[in-house]
Image (cartoon, rainbow, N blue to C red; front, top):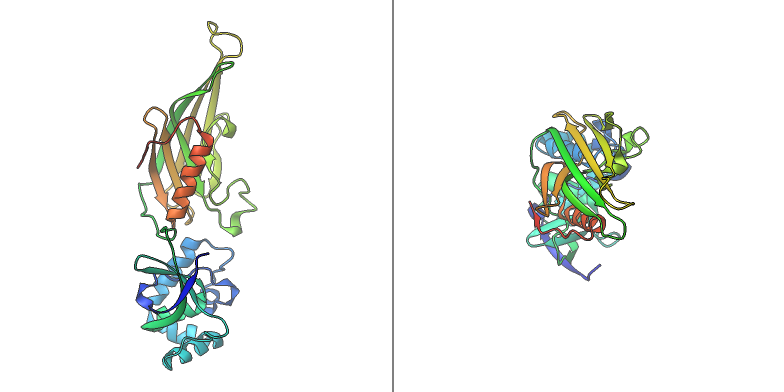
Amino acid sequence: MVSSELKRVPVDRIAEFPTELGNRCYLLKTIKLHPYCDSEEVLAEALEESARDPDVFRNVCLSYSPCRKFYDEYQKGNTPFFNLDPIRLEKYGEKYWAIEGKHRVCVAKRAGVKEIDAYVYELSENFHELLDQDGSSGTFAFESITYLRYGRVPRFAGAIGILMVDVPNRLRSEYPESHLLNHFFLDETRNTDGQWKQVLPGIRFRVMVEIKRPWFLIFGSKRIVVRSEIVIDPDHEKTKVWLARYSFEERRLKTLYRFGRWRNIHFEKLLKAMRGVFWKDIIRNVD
């Protein structure tokens, strides 16, 4: 990590409520959410909605002893326990994100504190910025063709679907095949023989593979045709879902549907995964 600088930071420039609050958050316990089981999307929505109701802060947050101590110190003009455990923030442009001291940042934002002391790490790239949600739920279809010929580099045609999902911990034992940033290519390795398979509640897919061996080509040649469909229901599980389409002719990656708290760093990982799989087919355009 780059070197830090001690600063007096305007709280209103801390971009969002931290969701990684661990088991100590009394508010999440009160509304029966679990920081290690529920998705970031569910937690963020609950934190943001509750912050709009001042009674929640007075009656719930301040009834919890640690948060009450944080609040009392802020009222005195101090940043709580800074000498023992400094708050640390990352900064890009005019925005900050909490990386340590998340509970104290949460209290500061809820209490309307103007400024806090923090060690600030300036970022050279904007890893944290949230990407906009995109597209509409529905049914999406793809068809790709892989030409394999002995002694030659494979050729690709058509388009392929790429799905990325984040399975909340409470569902991982039930849906073990899906993981955060698992680049779920709808290719021949996902063949379901046309049977529907569920990724998460409200998200299902099927893949059909046809292998053809043209008689007029030399031995060892074949053509693999992959037809796939994915259905994303409007009421799907509230978590990260990103479906993209890659066209081999256009060499273009296009987002078809994106839901949840995806960040710039996730986008870079998606591009890296694409280049790793289709190393001969350089991505030229991104939508």
